Length: 78
Image 1 (cartoon, rainbow, N blue to C red):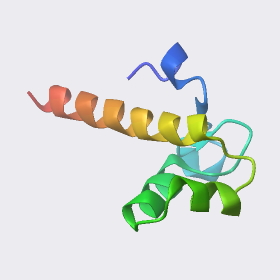
Image 2 (tube, rainbow, N blue to C red):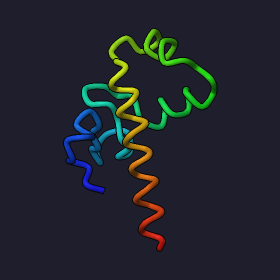
Image 3 (tube, rainbow, N blue to C red):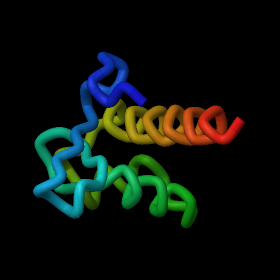
């Protein structure tokens, strides 16, 4: 995956931070954390209330990043 693609401009990956996990730019909130919270049934509003620096766009970016990563992982197996 081209992690520098404009559609993922809100996501950064730094091998020296949080074990290289994808995070929302300018935070230490991982894509994984957002997805787990959504998967546990928390609403976007609840997540944003707990993490005031997050925006709706950040949460959508986390979902898009994960979907693109999965799509690429499946294509790589073919």
